[in-house]
Image 1: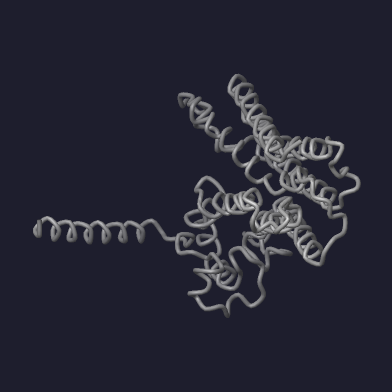
Image 2: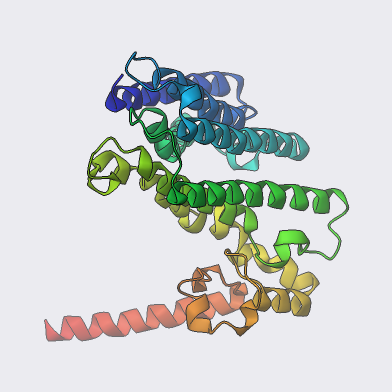
Amino acid sequence: MSQGFIYGISAAITLGIQLAGFVAAYTLRTETFYDILGGLNYLTLAIYAAIAGAADEESLKWVDDPRKIITTILFGCSRGWLLVFLAWRAHERKGDSRFDEVLGKGGNPPQPLNFFVFWMVQAMWVYLISMPMLFVSSSDVRKPEFSAYDIVWAILFILGVLIEIVADIQKALWVKNGRRGDFCNVGVWAYSRHPNYFGEIFQWWCLWMFSYSSSEKLSGGYVDPLWWVGIISPLFTMQILLNMKPTGLCNAEGQSLKRYYEKCPERYAQYRESTSILIPLIGYKYVPMFLKQTIFFDFEKYEYRPLNIQADENIKKENASEVQDYGSSSVA
């Protein structure tokens, strides 16, 4: 089967799973299996791509291709863990408050269209993140040996998966033990304020780089449009975790830090100053501020600002805008 055909069937499988999930979930007015179907969707694509990629007689069998083996296994471990963790978290939290409004809970009218958008965003998330895996599994290239390049990126991919799993487990145990110290700074959380997000982003950059050697182009992956399309996987992950307000850093930082600054302002300010927001790092407090707010992703939008300070800043911006508008109209 061609790579394009496998990509197309994978898109159809994803759309079918998420549409069926939406219909069932809205009928039952529940979000219980939203994350579960996301995880199962990933695993379904991995299994399908592994089978379809070796379906042709001239294709290298899955068991004879170390790239396909390591990609399928590590992808399965990563998404299998995500499935287990999100299902456990939803059970512990007795639901997901993100869906209360769209499902009409608390006396609100249901919003089927907005609920549908949630499921379609998940469909995009699953499919786009899976692209490097699909690229490797659907490739007919015959390179059974590993180069030094392959080994390095395979190891880094494993590292990214492990960082995310370890971070999730350490945070869960910290919560289970009563949230000692008010904020989590145990294990890898002592070197990154969000190591789980770092692991999620890092592993997809590594898998995309690892997939380079699976290009069917004789000149290499750099002339393969389908390999370049796979960069959407890490970029889309970064967009979700760094810039989208319902989740990721925009949800965890900013005004969500209020509880820490009210309970333990000095200790948390010290932790924040000396701990990287994303990339695990030793000696972060010595990094210049302009580097923190650029290449280390500690952007100003993640800062906590008390509401009275925010109000003052908004007033200043409005006044400045009025002055600018007045000047523009007078010139006109």
